[in-house]
Length: 270
Ligand code: ADP
Image (cartoon, rainbow, N blue to C red; front, side, top):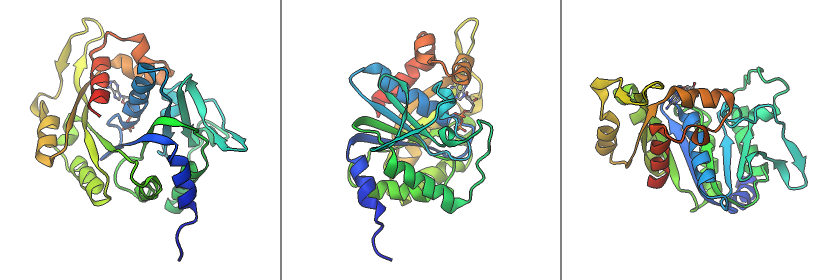
């Protein structure tokens, strides 16, 4: 087999993206997509001169479009390729969700087809010039993660690394360690660990309380143990979950939430 003919095409697309960041997690439900969407919004909201892209490669459970309020959009093809959907002046989104005839359709694909789709995303999406591309990946170290390798090869040197998302309970489990190990073996730099849903922000009194006392500080300790930076803890704020459900901007709607400050800190630490 000769060299993959798609790699130069992917490289050409990605050469126009300054910073590329993967968001990964050991398992589902820890808030990986939520953080992907929020981090992209922090980046885009922080500076209107920046252009940010979000690529949703969680083929089986695409939730980014809903979180960014663009779930009913469809993708258009231009001479340049697949045009991303704009979730704001400077926030572009691409997800398989845009290609499903019905919102509730399940994507039941085997590995090779999923990999093909991710590769097509990398090759064909007409992002144009981007300052940041934040990539939401499927949970775990499954099949599709192999296509992350295509991404890496396509990026050459211009790839920042991965943000690993965990919850305090998961810290006690093996999954997050495995994920960090996977990154290492795949040659992906770990930009840092984010602990999500670490505390609880009471919607009435706005005070944050610890809900998993036994594992308090676990994320930080794990980061130290694994030799990766700790990017901070994002508390559980029901208003964040709601904003995601309604596709509204949490950062604009609830700037007073400690979760907002935490998300901004994560971005500062990248
Ligand atoms: P994953 O991508 O890891 O599967 P999601 O981002 O879909 O997880 O999050 C799972 C659920 O938890 C969603 O309903 C989301 O709104 C909610 N959620 C995630 N993080 C927070 C948070 N910090 N505060 C409140 N709800 C959150």
